[in-house]
Length: 441
Image (cartoon, rainbow, N blue to C red):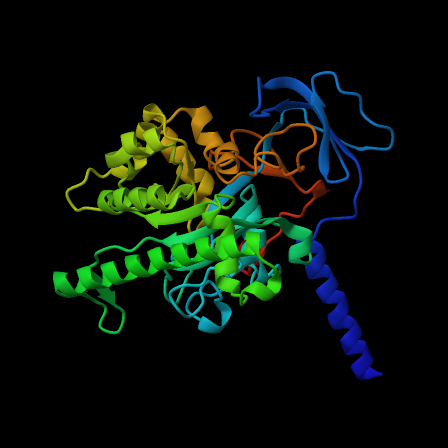
């Protein structure tokens, strides 16, 4: 009986934890008398937004509140689409220093069949922390590096998955299972960091160039074989060829149905990546792009969008101006290059809004700064029919604040994910409250 009591207590506590991370039962909500930033048109100064069955049912200045709806008085509050973090390892890495909690990459250099969604942990403690900052959906990208990643950055890292930040399982959370194929474009790298000695290590240029050419030739070979495999699928029966799951995963890429998310930072590598994708007829999205400003005309002419690394980062070169990365978003916007800003991490995903705000402080318009973490990532990743704006029929991933969501002092008052009022409780908040209330000596 004592054991049964302990089990029941454990189940009860587990239920409380799950309740804090999981949306409530489906219902209808109406947010009234709020200032609504739809990002799809003009701002509505005194509007109503209706949420029903997980989606936005109506939004406007003269919307009728449905009978039985739970009403939230939004007077003095502002309503926005939730933020979209367009490159993370969310759910793939928990404690970066503990390898058993990290599943952000696979062994081997070419893993196109890997799908991030299969490895995401919905119970990750990073998820509640991240959504408490107004981020309602993310793209989990395998083998994409970052502070929270470990293991090798494979040339073909696998398929990135988009999901909302609330739910019991990936089926509950998933927006799109396969959004883009990750490519860490080969580079001539002579300098590396040796963790064992905590020092930089140099190697001969010839050796680095040989490795670069080997990886590039192998990548080209994978694409060529995938193209032949895709043709065999289209013109033969299952018995006419031997199934290869890796080539099968690449078939949508070479057909132009699935974009490639190409990680490259140096201007030389970006040019090489663009040339490669042109030759292979691949739909390219540039990720990283620390020196995208140097090739902005090329990116604009090829209509290649960029997902930028955090701007709150040191410049690439020691002779660069301190604000080189901070001012790059404004420079790209002026050049007509479509871009978004991603966190490229888990631990610092909560700073996504700060990165956009600092870009605005260095020349980017306030409108573009907000869209760089809402609408633009949705457009770049082909998900703007579901998220990114407040429009009828879209997922109700909505944040309600008492001011500009890019400002540090702004408070998140209500959070809706897939139409459900979602808790903003998280580990950081609990620890803050615990140690704020500790007894005084």
